[in-house]
Image 1: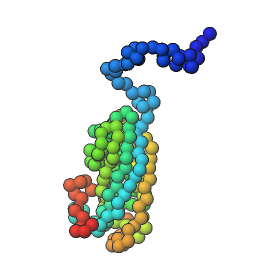
Image 2: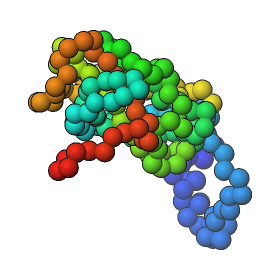
Image 3: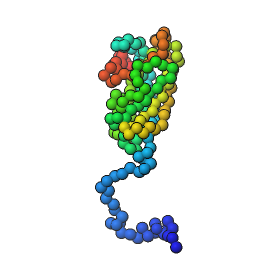
Image 4: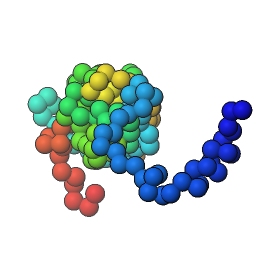
Length: 178
């Protein structure tokens, strides 16, 4: 007769604790973790302030965006990329941004990705970021969308809607009192 789960658990309870203590010298990922792509969650954007940028010139609003990430394979490292699509906007950056060009708080398994954008709304009432993370092994996870409304006082009303990704070194300091 094949033992059932209850009998096995009773038998394990009788085994001395020293026999049950395991030492793990090598950790391996499960097949599911190896095949799963990274996931994004909790997208957030902070309405910014008005700026005039040069090289190339652009009047716009600075927005700070953040998104949590989790990758069971630990592939959020050099070679990983964040795809940022903005429907209806001209962008000055390629859709796939190397992870090294995005702020990262955390490690290769989990943390927060941060970036700054300069948005010229034109006549549009909002912008939507469509975000996808691809790890260094090429596995892609979920896609998140984040719609951020034009904030009161946004001055840019003429011309086409444009969006520019700002490296940390190029992000202008906020005005006093921001």
